[in-house]
Amino acid sequence: MRTWQVGDVMTRDVATVAEETPYRGIVDVLVRRGVSGAPVVDSFRRVLGVVSEADLLHKVEWAGHPDERRVFEGRRRRTAREKAGALVARDLMTAPAVTTHARATLPAAARLMDREAVKRLPVLDDLGRLVGVVTRGDLLRVHLRTDAEIREEVVREVLRRVLAVRDGLVTVQVRAGEVTLDGRLDRRSAVELAGRLAGQVGGVVAVRNAIGYDVDDTTLRELDPVHATPVA
Picture 1 (cartoon, rainbow, N blue to C red):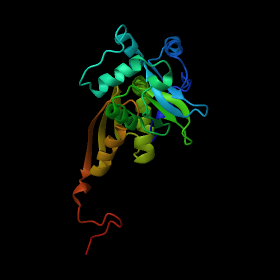
Picture 2 (tube, rainbow, N blue to C red):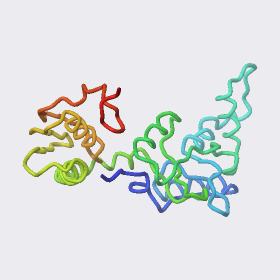
Picture 3 (tube, one colour):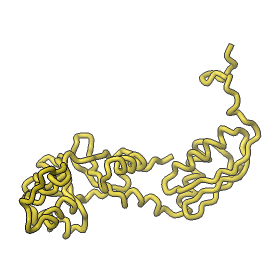
Picture 4 (cartoon, rainbow, N blue to C red):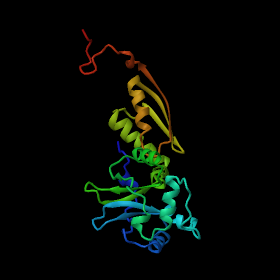
């Protein structure tokens, strides 16, 4: 069964800037490419940080009073004031960058974005070089798959290839990404596995597992899990 990875949905033609790119040059790149942020890379395409619209807007926020200070100034306000006076990407960027790899799964990338509160992740190869960027929108792209594509993968990969279920024993219906499984199998463990694997198919938003079973083999706790023989 195919596992969707970051490399399947990332943008490969990445807008980047160098450490010495001036403020106006960064603005030009973001506006011209229609992006809200860009990785800052060195000559080997190693990611040094990310500069975003939020980093650039501090200059607008502090326009007219860049030297205004408070006696007790928090880290966030101090950082904003410093970036308001910065002129090049090296001083404007947020570093270190939160990155991922092309082989990372989409759920792993989504959890990383949520945990680090970022909207994009530079994608690195095995040598640490930039090969793409994945955004929140990219991660959602998998849900643009049609119901027919989802159904075909559930039938082909889950039922036929993994579970070796004969055609006709289980029916699969998909509507707006919601999968309904119905029919009957011999073992409860196979039923549960079918539902679990169907939920991992790209584009699936929910699974209704209505498959019946003949034997509840999940209650046989006394069997040896390796050799499937009674434990003495």
